[in-house]
Image 1 (cartoon, rainbow, N blue to C red):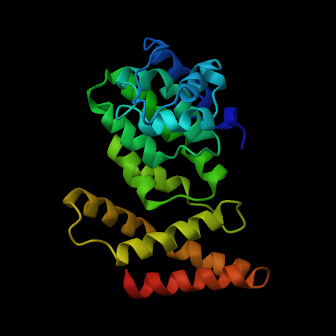
Image 2: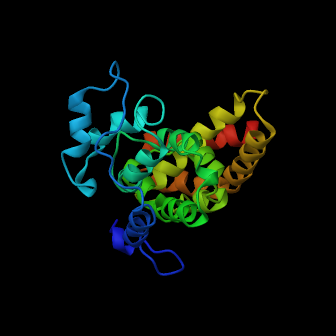
Image 3: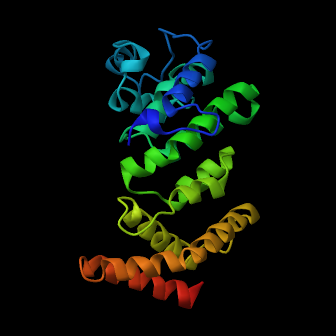
Length: 243
């Protein structure tokens, strides 16, 4: 998938929205003396953050800082300086920094208290880059959706991206996601919050609506890929009997 071909209704590409994140967060300047716990953060770790321009830092360069940011290394403004590159890595490349870690750090940085323009820049990128993330990783978890929904990305828009016809490169992702969701929904913790249960109900309803699509998939793959056809059949059985 070409980055520049992924457009929002506004006509802005994913790359445009990445650039917007860099612009909106450019006021958070590089701190060459970020405080870090000496037991957790080495001089080599600190040097790594300063070894390259921001846009050239890799996931390996940024992972430890991202993991420890605001707990044992740096403050919220330090995190926000590196955030545009972190977002770019999470949503457009196969990265060791994932949505769950990003979500936890945004909350630690008091994301909902940021200026609206900063929040919107992050949300616009997450929504627009979601199809690219699905295509790159071929693996989407229920927690990914919960975390993005919690930040303010519309759940149904995220789910709609995964709807695709049999034969599509991302159809296996759709089947795997629904199958994983069924496992989670069937074994969900009854102590989950009302908000989590409401979100799961939406996902359950959406999954049920994909029944006809999965049926077409079974017949499409029955001869060419019997193993995958059986996986679809098992998922359909569980949908019919447990949802």
